[in-house]
Image (cartoon, rainbow, N blue to C red; front, side):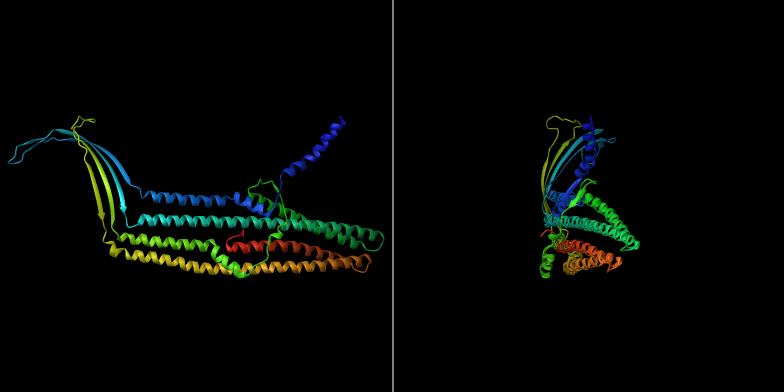
Length: 438
């Protein structure tokens, strides 16, 4: 019975850890990007817009199909004055009432409409391409959001690790100060200063942990994970590659950026719009077949030879010649609208170049910061070692000792943050070229 109680107690102690472990998910930055793309609601919305454009394309294609209609009519006539007398002719006696059934079936096919249907199809296809580029752009935004949030969590995790190291070091220094105090080497003030430092760093740790929970939750939502998932991240600092010449990124941005490609497509679509407007001045030609059913007997199903079914074939050529002088201003308006796309592309190209240059310089600065901070850590480490030795020998004050230690751990935190900032700056540079995944 005692053994069972011990086993149950051990299981109860392990259960929270087991449940916690089930909600822990280790993710690399590439896995986070993949999950973000797969579960993005914004991407699903963009995909829906593409499907809408494709559906509209099918509607435009349907306009080239023949039109057909069927109608049926029943008429009843009362003829109070049913005798018609015309001088020089025998009187005509009409029935007092009459019934008739009439049916019409008609099929019409537009053979030539100035090419407007063709231009409409091509223009709609191009609008579907614009929607696809919208999807690509949203995908880039989702990817960058996953990267940015992942790096934010990385910053906090690294800061948390350094703070834990700082607390461990302070605890060691506090024990040493307490021993020195017992031996009469230092004053009570030295002990209190280390205790105060420990409290301040503990407060910093609490703030970091709170921010970690916020960012972790945001990343769970962004990636479509259960909201209680604890994400363990790997060091993404190695993802930042060596920077290429600025011209490489400028050339890629001017070629790849979705906004510029969309303006090119809209410019091509404007060509078809102009052609469609010009087509208003051309004649149209169509063919048609009409079938009539005329039954004047009043019987729904008449006897033989009491109804007729004439079939007519027709060809229609029409030309609204008034458009020859009323359409020119519409063409001018369409051309002006097309010119707007060219102006917009010039402006957007300048914006893209300035954005890429800014992000390129920011990445360079971020990389240089890492080198400077690595040097400062080496200096802070040596400074901390010297003041630790001096404090043990009662040469340096407790303030000098705490300041040296604080500088070292602050430099370590700054380095981890700088690595994350460099990674974000690298992905920001890639995003400004229009393609994060190279």
